[in-house]
Length: 390
Image 1 (cartoon, rainbow, N blue to C red):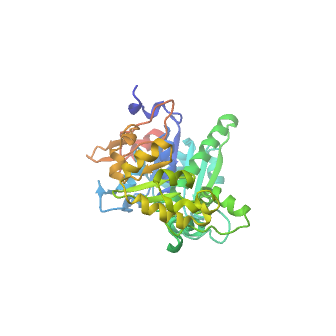
Image 2: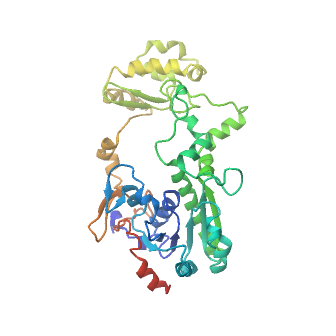
Image 3: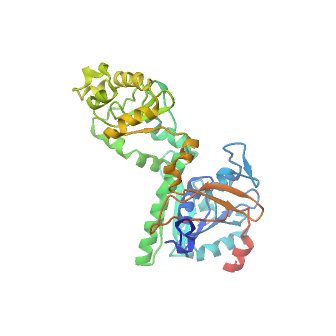
């Protein structure tokens, strides 16, 4: 069977039922990772509007009445419409949880307890269940009830002070990095708990938060900070790419695009680029950090004189770590991207079709492929009720 056609039924989590009560990004990203490993994901949604990310528009593009981000993060899932204020619907949901292997929830603190669906109550229904919770800032401390939103978590985590040039002030990531990292961390915890369940027969409660995931994301530089007298890092004032790395580390404009230069001795770069102005720094490695702005400015002036391809023809044969900076169109057209077969088209019976990404994982040498698009609200409710006797 070709790698592009590996069905979910042949993947490691095939046969497992994941009930996803979360919405927006962090929890649904977690369940997407489990789905791409073969799990069946039943998405619990409100009958009146569903997941709020159905209306979270990143552009003016709408497909089948929903946002592109909803389609991207909920492909191939099933939708079970449940009114959490209706006792009959709650009873049906509890019945479903009694059959499930995993529950994911990211309700605001206190909400899940009021519903009687917190871990202790659900554990009584199904001791084998792996219960996963994602919050904004954990379950203790003064931030617990603050909005668990990606930009706000970035702001509180210190991570914004690693991006951009020194004079720019805090620079946030241009992605929902807290949501994605928390979802990935939660998926790791769920997988570990499932392994333990396979040994002991018991489920467990996995917890993480946007804030905790961002702290872990910074483990490398935070460890440096904690062990060097807790000096705050100073970003480069010129073409900064990493607060702790010396010149030439950064991105430089060439005459027709941008060239990324990673770590290498300034002496070697001075010879290859034929830059006499770097002579004072050649044999003084300490200056590669203390004078990195001046060094990078000198390099930038030279890089601007030629095209990216001209520089690559000089630098790559000399084993200099460098790369052309690609925009999305260039990346999608590149042979390196095409070789990995990372895109797919998913469809629905109402003529919805959306082009999206595939799983980043390969299992036994092959990558999973799905065909179903994200569901309509409650699309699978009747089937799920009949299947589980709800």
